[in-house]
Image (cartoon, rainbow over all chains, first blue to last red; front, side):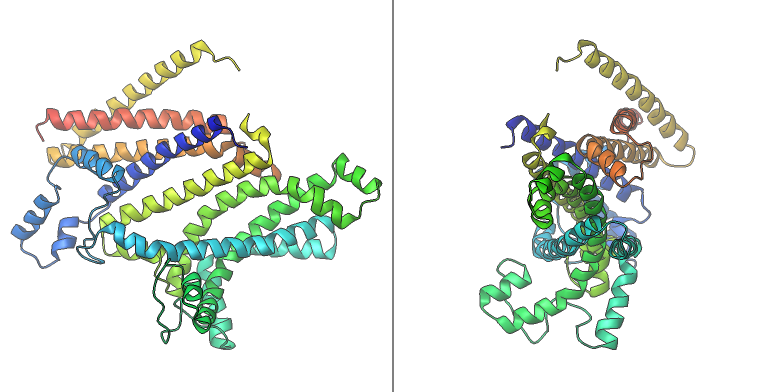
Length: 337
Length: 116
C-alpha cells in the first residue's frame, strides 16, 4: 500500500512542473517573432483593425499583467478561444475532441513496445552472448537510433506502396461512419458492434502503432536485458534452481518481478517520448490528434491552442510518471523511504 | 531522519542571494534595451527572458526532484553515466529558478516605474 505522505509529496510536485511549463510556454510565445493581432486580423487588415484586435486581447497591457492573467485563466482551465484553427471555438473543446486520438495512439504504442520489448529483453539476458543476444541488441540499438520521421515513411513505402496491404493514412476508411462515444476509434467501433469498421480502424492504426512501438520496444528491451542480467545472478535465483525449480519458472516467478522494477520507471519516461513521437507520427500518418493540432497551431500562430496543447502534453507526462511512481512503490516499498 | 535546522536558513539566504542577482539582471537588461526599444518593448522583452529562465528552472528542478533518482539509476544500468547527479541538478536549477524569479519581479517593477 502506498503511504499518504508519499502520495502527497508526489502530488505536490505536479504544481511546480505545471507552473514551470506554463511559464516557459508563455515566455517562448512572447519572444517568438510575429504579432498575434496581425495573425488574427489577417495580413491585409487595416492598422486600425489590428489595433482594435490588440486592444480586445489585452496585448497592449504590460507583459507581466498578461502573464498574471494567463496564469489565472490556466488555473481555472480557461484556455480561451482558438484564433484560427477553429475560430471562436473554446480551446478546451478542441482539445477534448483531439486528445483521445493521441491517447489511444500512445497507449497502443506503449503496449506494442511492452509486448515485444519485455520478451526480447528477457530472451537476450537468458541467452547472454549468444547469436540471439547479439541480434536482439543490434535490433534494440537500431530501434533507438531510427527516427520516427524516417521509419514512418519507410513503412508506408513498404506496406502501403510496395505490398499494398495497409492503408497509408487516417484512422478509419471513409466508407465507415462511427459515432464518437469515447473518442477512441477501436473502442467506439466495438461499442457500435461494427466489426468491419473495427477491422478497418485496426488496419489503419497498425503502422502508426508499430512506428511508436519500435522506439519504445528498443528502449524497454535494452533496459529489461540489463535488469534481468543483474537479477539472474542473485543468490535467491541460484537457490531456486538448486532446489530443483525449472529455469523458466524461476525466471518468470522470481526474476521477472524484480527485474521489472527499473523497467517500470523507464515506461514513465518513455511515455514522454511517445507523446513527443506522436507529434511526428500523427503528421506522417495524417491522424488528427493533438500532435497535428500542435503543428498546425504553431504554423498558424494560434497562440491559445499552442499554449493549451503544450500544457496538456506536460500534464499527461507528469500524470503518467506519477502513476509509475505509485506502481514502483507498490512493487518495491523501499522507494518510499 | 531529523531535519537540519540550519538547512532552511541556508536555503533562504541562497534564494535571497540568487533572487537579488536575477533582479539586477532584470533591471539592467530593461534599461539596456531602452536604447533599442520603447519602454514597453524593453520591459516586456526583459520580463519574457526572465520568465523563460524561471519556467525552465522550476520545471527542471521539479523533474530533478521527481525523476532524479530514476535517471541516475537508468544511467547506471545502461552504463552511460555522464556524472549527472540528482543533487547537483537540484542545486543548479534552484539557482536558475530563484534568479529567474528575481528577474521577472524586477522587470515588472521596472515597467511600473517607467509608467508602462
